[in-house]
Image (cartoon, rainbow, N blue to C red):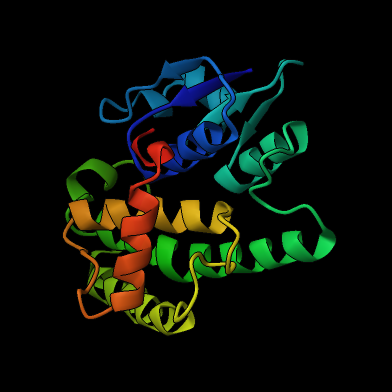
Length: 203
C-alpha cells in the first residue's frame, strides 16, 4: 500500500488512524497548495481531485477518509478503532457520521469560502456568502456535542474510536483557521486535551 498524503485535516485523520493502528505505510506527498492534486496524475488516482488517497496492493485506489479507515480496520483489526462487535461498530459509525456532517463539513467549507477563498475559488464552487452561517452551524453542533460528552472519556464512552480521530483533526484545523474551540465548552476542551496528549495526534 501507499498513502498519497498532503496538508489538511483529511490526510491528518488517516495518518492518525494509521499511527493508532501501529502500522507502517509508505507515503508520497502531493503538493496541495500548488494544485498538484488537480493535475492529471492525481486525477487518475482520484477523479474528485481530493486528498488523501490510498493505493492498495492490487493497484486499486481508495479515497474518502472513512472508507480508507474502514479498509485499514478490516486489514488490521487490532487495536479496534471502529469496533469489535456489530453494536460497537454501529455506535462508532453513528457518531462518525454526526461529527462529519454537522461539524467537519461546516468547519471545512466555512474556511474554504472565507480565509481559504483565494486557494479554492478557482478549484471548486465556492459560496462566500455562506461562510459565516456554516461557521455558526459548526459552533452550534460543537456546543451540542459538549453536552453529550458530559461524564464521557471519549465520544463513544470508554472506547477511543475513529469518531474521536475525525473530531480531533477537524477541531485542531479549525483552531488554525479562525474557528477555535469556545473555552466555555469545558467537556470538549478536556476531551481535546486528552486526545492531543496521544502520540498519534502528532502524525
